[in-house]
Length: 66
Image (cartoon, rainbow, N blue to C red):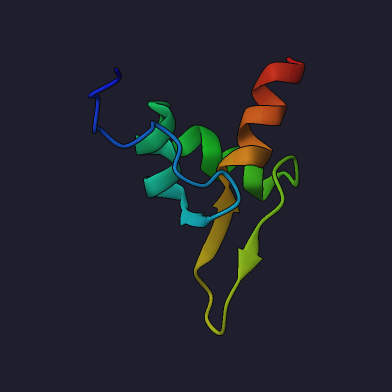
């Protein structure tokens, strides 16, 4: 019987996250996500303001392709 009640590392890979949240979840430097997003390597999303969001799935796909 599995009694591990801790949440999975990635709850929802398609959830929109800020650059800082994504960096903390993936344990990579914030500036690397920021640079990749600015260069257009990672797709970004904006919702009614200038704050940019990313999906963990997009970052993980980029890392697995490298």
